Length: 615
Ligand SMILES: Cc1cc2nc3c(=O)[nH]c(=O)nc-3n(C[C@H](O)[C@H](O)[C@H](O)COP(=O)(O)OP(=O)(O)OC[C@H]3O[C@@H](n4cnc5c(N)ncnc54)[C@H](O)[C@@H]3O)c2cc1C
Image 1: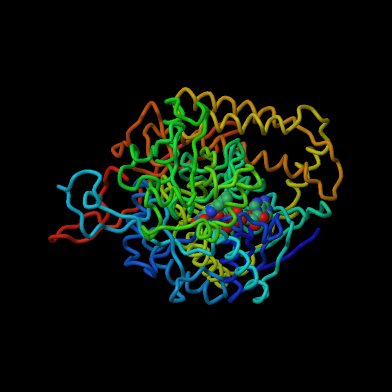
Image 2: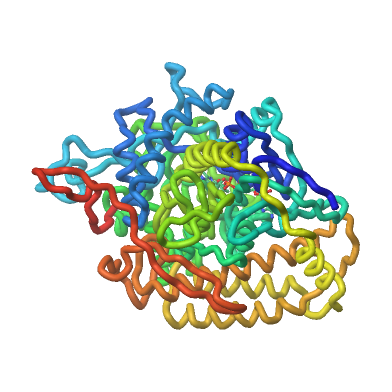
């Protein structure tokens, strides 16, 4: 048996995992296990920016940021967690700067910031009696809060954190794929992983284990997510009886490249880009009269669907245009400063986006608009955690001893029903850091506990039986059917009927999955085997997502039920917890949202009173 022992084992080398590793390795032995080479993690694909109220270009405050985050999440956000996020964001950005992250700069040498959807400040000249459409009639105005390195912010964060981890002596197991958690009496004592190059199993014995395995957008047909985003961490925990939180809230980003889903960052609109329907109308004026193209993502994605349904897609098809030409930005006066810009400015601000469009679409965005459609982008739900990254096993807040999570695999919950752009990267660094600290403290407090005999046994027998199976149906067919079902029946819009269909279909796919085989029976780089195992994870998470969506009979944030079009705070102002109950069955329970109270006129009142979300 290949046996390794570390105080802390971190599964995942994206922003969340690396930030945690940097912190925990200051105090205890730490290893990072990653199925990808670390700098290939999806964090490296993040484009537009990372939010923090630095107030480098205009007045801003962490309180403004917290309000926007809570409203953006349609009030399903845990408010203490959001306040911590927005307060600690500022310090984290300076930490990253001191680590050497090459942010873009203002003329004065400060970190540059840009606008992003849903990030606002109060309008000092607001007048509720002003004529609609005028500047004074807008209660809030866009604010420049997204720190960025051109449109390659995530790449720079990932490279910076990786370099720091190497400098600090963190041990890396690259291209090791975690297949199971070692759980004893409800406590996590390590993981089992397969070394991709050799097919050998390895046992990692630990006091603290962190799941930082990122998102699971590959359950949908059109997605911005990399192929490796298959939700292994949450799926494996779910199989061990740990609940998943708020899975019905999956974000569709409005501007994916038509049919391919490749992301065209919201920075396009932050920097002045405008969306048009097939009739050349700036349709966001109708759906979000104040913030227009800078409304939150769920609002923009639904608006695109509405336009397409009304026959106003381009050429009657299911896409619209995103236009970032300098002449358009000048015509609509949407540049961040309100002044005029030229093509060279656009090229400098959005170099990768322009490159993607030229390469994948054959369209030059300097000269023509780009065809776009909503693309599955971000999981608001995931493993429930407390403020220190401990995974929770029930609605009372009891932690699973030894198990931690942060980043997209976790749900702390700072994004509620809809995440604002640039709030994921900041979640990674703020909660990655907190989790790293708490894992180290947990490990320092404890001795290693014994592992069961033969801890890799169950993993070995399931791989052996998969390899021994004769090839029946191709697994790729199952994956395609799952992705089409989730896209069509559990996508931007949902109904009881579509979700019931999705539930039955996923159950059917899970049955068929039991007999799929793989053609490669070898042990060296058997990627076919690993993809089948990843598909198993996606099927489990699809089951949980559909169960959450079916149970939530309201529309809130990224979850839009056509049969229940309104938000229903009397019944559903609560987080869902989704539990595996037998082979093809998931149960749903609810737990309250955390609310911050303040004193006003001698009374305790909510600091962020519920309001109907308008942009
Ligand atoms: C195209 C794109 C652009 C984005 N732009 C922005 C942006 O501008 N601003 C913003 O705030 N957010 C953005 N996001 C969202 C943000 O990038 C992600 O939510 C975030 O990077 C997730 O980080 P993470 O550390 O949780 O996981 P990831 O960076 O996805 O890393 C996951 C890690 O887990 C490892 N792993 C997974 N499964 C296993 C396993 N079984 N065994 C071992 N290792 C495993 C992988 O190897 C990888 O290292 C964007 C997302 C996309 C897809």
